[in-house]
Length: 109
Image (cartoon, rainbow, N blue to C red; front, side, top):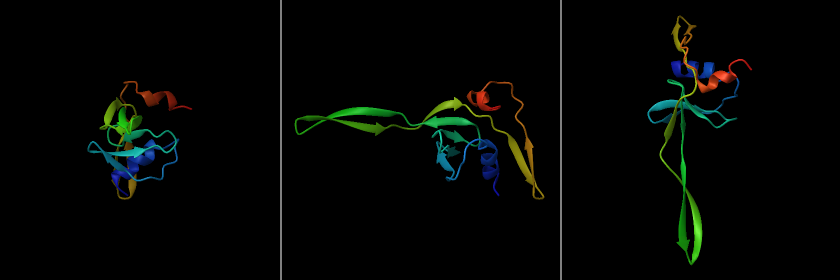
């Protein structure tokens, strides 16, 4: 089992996750199927794709078209933890940062 898969297992406590890990802006990310949040499993950074509504004239009619823009970051929103695998055992070093993160309010639900 890769370190990425183990990290993802820790993050997914309250969400069922069955999708692949995808790369966003060079970072391995998961997409929560319930909330649709895209989170880096390395840094806890949250990503989104803004949209732009473009108005085009076609045959005398105005047509609206939604265009996806490049990925953007919301910053670090999810706490992550270091881990290592030795002799088939998983060791987790909890992140002891006191910096408050957006996901902290859900930690004890």
